[in-house]
View: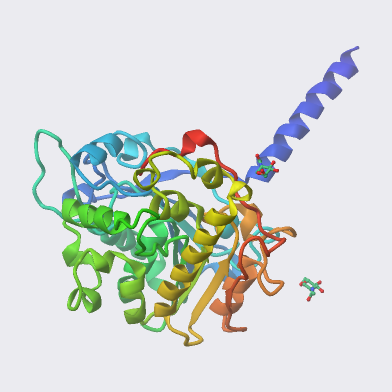
Length: 398
Ligand SMILES: *[C@@H]1O[C@H](CO)[C@@H](O)[C@H](O)[C@H]1NC(C)=O
Ligand SMILES: *[C@@H]1O[C@H](CO)[C@@H](O)[C@H](O)[C@H]1NC(C)=O
């Protein structure tokens, strides 16, 4: 009787331990010190934050700084909506688990597991480009994303980033865009002998007309840039020639980036399809909804429009240039952000191009073992894809 109870408890304990092992360990939230005195604060005025898991062994002087994503806010109303959420306030943030490119286990992250790994939380709504001095007392909104970027990097320098021999700036979605927009400026913070490279994931947002012929995303980005006062913090190599709005798009910035960069993206990025190519405003009758939630539901006509999107994506991507220092892993999976989820980063059944996982392609490129530039065949040709299926309730506007 008693021993049966003990063995039940032991079973439970084993289950809990297995669960913990599968999840990795919680990485605590760290608030940036002195950020408030620099005015480098989240939308609500709270200090920005990040998570840091220290490197070990041979990784002790190597760093991944990974930027969280989460869309943008393009006007006072939408910024007020996010101000008291985790995307606008560190008061709402919690400890998190690291996985994929941030995992500390060799079996899940063979080339970077022992690096110093940092995840920077996103709480400004402008991909870290904003900087407006004034704060309207009626809204108490702070537009200070660019100051947050500098304050976080300065704190990390003091924690050992200043001794980095290897460093990667990466990020997902709006954090992938941050990675592109700040790639060269990140390098300037680091020792000149350091091997510094950038890996934007799902951040190559393209300037396309939506299916109704409207310039939805261009209009939206122009509102982001003007709300946050972003113009002066966008790459001057671009803003000296083009409007700040255009310089918020990777395709007008990419050819000027001198730091090596590796673009991880789907050519049918599920976020871009749902919110840029077929935003709600372009499909008032909701005739795309079943296709947007599950790509295998798309009609032949919708699929041919999506092949057109892929062509436009590839044209925009060509601006990255073809030097061996520019790598790319462009699959045809209905996905968005593939470096942090373990399933897409490095597992036996992860998506592959040229029989190579994203983890191996990025690492081979980073260490100069081989270059990697592959754009997948058209959907649904790649059997290794893990195509996302969404809920209809995930379809409201951005
Ligand atoms: C996606 O759509 C296909 C085709 O209609 C269907 O067979 C599949 O079950 C759907 N997937 C999910 C998870 O609903
Ligand atoms: C693909 O890669 C795996 C693991 O590296 C290898 O065992 C396999 O032979 C490769 N397959 C092909 C077709 O090259």
